[in-house]
Length: 96
Image 1 (cartoon, rainbow, N blue to C red):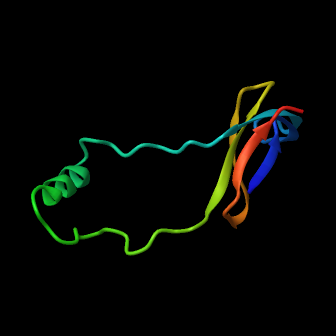
Image 2: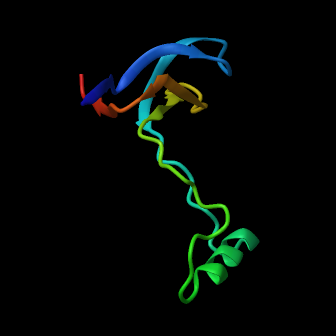
């Protein structure tokens, strides 16, 4: 199941304070810092033979909120936009 989104959208830019053309891009997300204290602690707990590690998720979410980044072509300002509610559909950006 795929949810399609066009490459260019005309929407409101809060920096320009008017409707302008924006380019759409998929939101990839941030990677966790490899040397943060919490990451180091959980890696230390996972070493060797063990049972369940404290703080692990008991179940995995089956759906997520699809997010896109809209970048204004005039000023370059970027807006994050969530596409609807939780869905199993994958967001895909297509050419017009």
